[in-house]
Image (cartoon, rainbow over all chains, first blue to last red; front, side, top):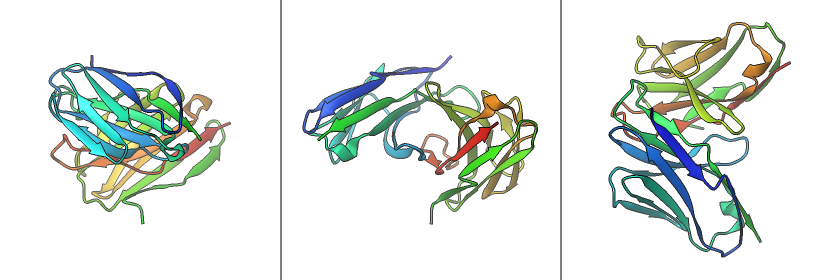
Length: 112
Length: 113
């Protein structure tokens, strides 16, 4: 069974304090690893897709990386507006529903 | 206008009532999904559809049904609502490649009393 585990569940940082969020995955035949941002009461907003180990993508203060077992979302010098829940999803090659399995998310709070 | 639109955004209904949540998209995607989100449980797949004639059960389909009225429209019904169906519901779409990102609607917050 495909599994995605995100850690920590919650993280509180000071503005400017860099850190990383972890997404560990166990899927058969990874076809894609997705990161989303979700604000309270809103739908997940797509951030990145990573397809193979060693791949990296960046957007503003965010950088996503991928290994064969986990993905990291690095946040550099975060600002209060980066506060949100960050979701990770992995897609395996098995299963009919595109095999997209979501983690439970990391709730990030950036304090001014 | 949003690419994926859900109606209603909020709904309170009584136990035993039938309720329909609607989703429409302008992305032109073939694949549409209904997810449920509960605190501490993450997003769970209820039903999905790869095209107008295709309907498939997801992880937690009991108590739910769906209808794909057109490529752009996918509705979720609760035949007889119960309190543990209180949750945030999301519709999502993906293109037919199957390994690209999903686009989500803004969600419907459903409360069953």
